[in-house]
Image (cartoon, rainbow, N blue to C red):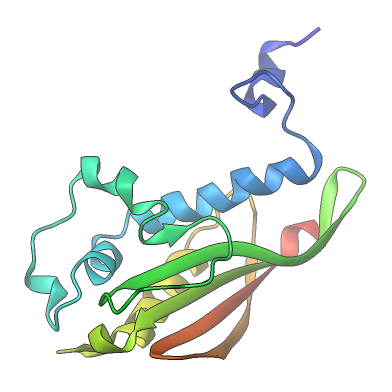
Length: 173
């Protein structure tokens, strides 16, 4: 029998959200947090050198950002010459022990087409890294719990500038 308390762990089709499937919830909590930052949304949407002067992204537009600019899975970026910035949210390592995750490493890849990386305030890749890091560091309320930065690494791609940010989920360890 399912009680009201169990409903929060149910997926839309009625299956209980347990085990590894909870990682989907955690990814979308991170994505929802990122979608609240207008500066980040403008940097993703507007490839010009001054995205800050552009119109704010509307609430209706935010839904289209998932799978267009922000992806809840790793993806091989293929911009086809389009000036674009993308973010990929995923987990690199982790295992289940009991009801918790151990060694869970959240990764956020930032990929920018070289043609749109330059802005009036510096390079788009570094600005986006800074915004994401600040948002995650102030977000104690995520279902993931406390995050500990593991730094960043450079990803080498043709005609793209890319970085990976890593965060160890310390509440589960």
